[in-house]
Image 1 (tube, rainbow, N blue to C red):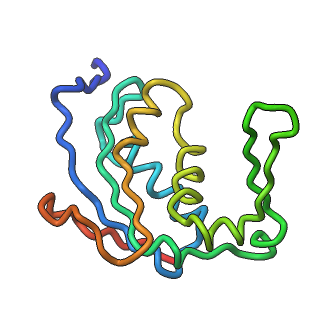
Image 2 (image 1 turned 90 degrees about the horizontal axis):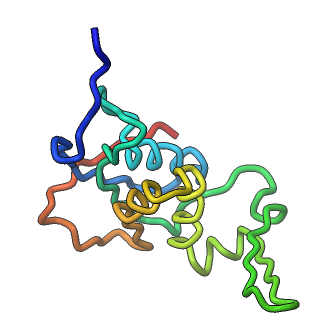
Length: 144
């Protein structure tokens, strides 16, 4: 018996809506990365983008456990000498929650052409509103 290999033109994409209100950052990100990658489907193929679209709302209400808000640090570098910037994750979640969630999910995807294609199917919104009602997203419940 041969193993089934999904073809890119055969993949049917769905839209999922995740409410981040009160959810833990890492657990929410791992569920979103699984859906973006397509690992929740029975015909998952590692070299084909089988994933679905993910919409995350209420990104500012995501929480961190323990002392991560004070201890965890996000680094960026401008590639110029002395261009290192360090921001505590608690401050990053207050100022740019969409960026913090996107970077966390990107860290769980493959870092190649396929991963760059997958991350484009992620939409993160700070508030409760999103402009994707026409796609009829399926609400996804995550256990806290």
